[in-house]
Length: 348
Image (cartoon, rainbow, N blue to C red; front, side):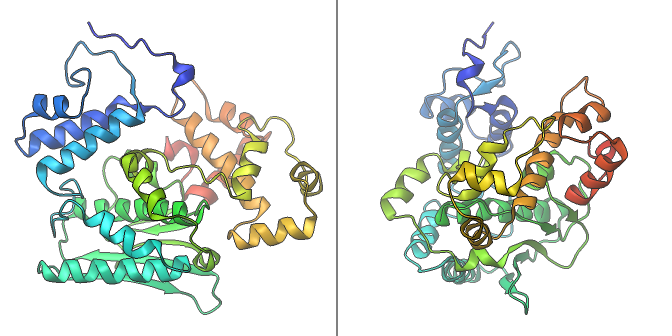
């Protein structure tokens, strides 16, 4: 019997074994040699064995396995976007075309142009656009492929979430997706969508899209090609499992101050300026530049902890509400529905 001998305290960047098994099931669907893939990825055991009790694998193990699967099937989309194959190396070339841009807006336009050229050459029709509202408050990135299979549209939308994570890395900021729309119907199993989108998701729309603050488009890129080469080694982990923390952003610093137990009162804005050692004016300007506010950061922090706790067994909705700072369960229900588009019970 294979046992998990790792100390869970050391696994703050661990990957649940289910993600690894999903990669191997994909390999089997393509009739690939799973033991050979595991060996080339230097994987210490077969996660599909019945006697495996390991709960987590490391981010390095997951990333190596994912990259080996991509090389084996010759498609960087992992075969989840059948409208067009993405040859190995395409993502790196798109990233290089973006990384020397002056702003995120310029980088996204380069990425869209690169993407359209690649798709057209392979005979697929796509709609891939960056739209900004008249007030320059909200930006929307869209992608629609000609394949109307529901599972394909679900995969396309999740890929948009991955690109938002990459864009956040480019500018050193967390990009909060406030709304997503899907060109397919609501899936029977919601775990995938919930993993990428804690925000409201609308289904059966005309296009797959993610909406975020247009302020991010003005942000300067802070990464180099050397940074990109290091990022790509663990890109499957950062883009699929957990985005690389934007430690340079004030948003990240505030989230660290808030923690994850909201039964105690959160700092006021004035107290926060003291903790960050900056004036109220400077803090407001920094938050505005990052396309967010202190209230939104607090809401998102409570939302993320609530989602995590609702996924656990043995906790009632009322207990979760109390942990995230709501003495009135009905107020928690209203807030949670505003944050995610669903009630806590439906989400669970």
